[in-house]
Length: 223
Image (tube, rainbow, N blue to C red):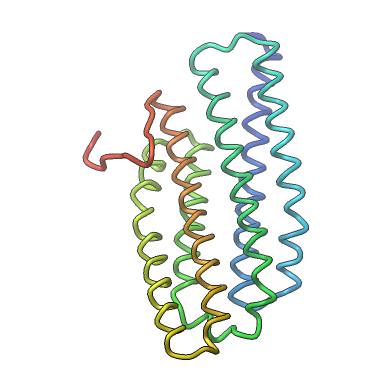
């Protein structure tokens, strides 16, 4: 392996780590903007999504360049394949953060309504899943990735709880229809964050263990 080739792979990993850090910050800001009715912070998240897209394009180009100019061996080929998939998941997470930011203005008059739901708890759980999935990649840690996979059910449970509660709120009063509708969409966005985190975790397990886990089909009793 040439030194230039090693540098290319190291730079690719660094780019993914930087993109992951940016996406984590985007989620933090988006959730804070919703729960604290901060429209300026929401605009910041939406505008900074362009930076996420720039990372997405740069990482894709770097992977294609390494594929074209080198003949990666098995572990490096797995890294490139995982990098492309993780990059795609991070870009989608960034899009969701921007979408959450767009929900802030219509929800601002209903901040008490928002904070009467377990949305903050759900968002914190999904945010931790994203963080741990990125950490599992940074540290080549398949055990941490497996922990992410086992955390998805809790977020799904929050999503179902919020959906059921919002339907009940709509039935109570027509005035609840608008905020409840927005909250159901926000909840679904957050649920998708968790799904993308599990996809990253699956990619890390593939990278480290050369084992493909599709559709989160991980057996926690399996060693």
